[in-house]
Image (cartoon, rainbow, N blue to C red):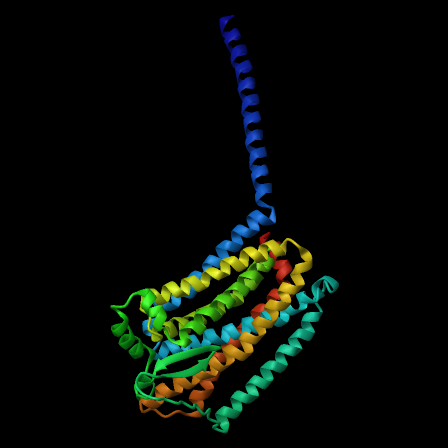
Length: 376
């Protein structure tokens, strides 16, 4: 009798415990769903991932300072040449395949993305004219004329590349073995005892042009990303790719110019970080404006013009200049610069260029399917 009573009590206790446990589990699930739904709002989850992306972009840009001592290695110039080509392809492709059509609300009126076929024709024509110019330079031996004007050892030779003014002390620029590394060592020797404020006062005009130009450039990048992440996480990540590929070669040259302008390595990195912070301000403003849908086309139009200009007017001249530097290294090593070498350089650059085009076209054509696949 006692054993039956014990079994009944055990069964009753088990049912009570299971009911309490079920209530607790349901409560935990409801709280988790509430938290997840809260994070699903654009101002939380999208902004959080967007800020992380901006931070990643800024960190990848600073990687240029780490590999700066290796920029005179022949292999490095080949790799950087491919990266510059990738930046040209992704920037131009992003502008033509994504930003400019979105500025006209074309994707909304054309869900099948047939407009991308016409955009592809535009990109192919650009590429054909680019290849025409490069092949003429190779087979007709068309050389670019570099004009320099110096007034003494303390003056600078200014050369414009990728939209940035590169300043190298003239006594290094006129030397056969001139290099940014040699110039940097000399400048660092003189500026080691000077403070940041004094160095900023004596910083060359090229350094200030780089700093101010970078701030504006990074601000517009942040503005674009802020608006894009408010549309969707996938759209924000899609526009992040060309910015990442473009920042690496750009910032590498910017840090070198800041060093040549009279700053130490730490001061150049600080200036570079301060200019990068404008990307956060642009992102916050873009996220706020991105909540208002009628602002989206204007932001995309602004970014589209900037991306296409940087890709075609800034990065392509740098691509050509990098090929000339590789040839110069062969000449200094007393090696013959043959047409085969020139074609190899062109192939290296075109591999990055075409890859960038293909990436942006595929993301434009099948981006929504990829978002659904990974459930972004």
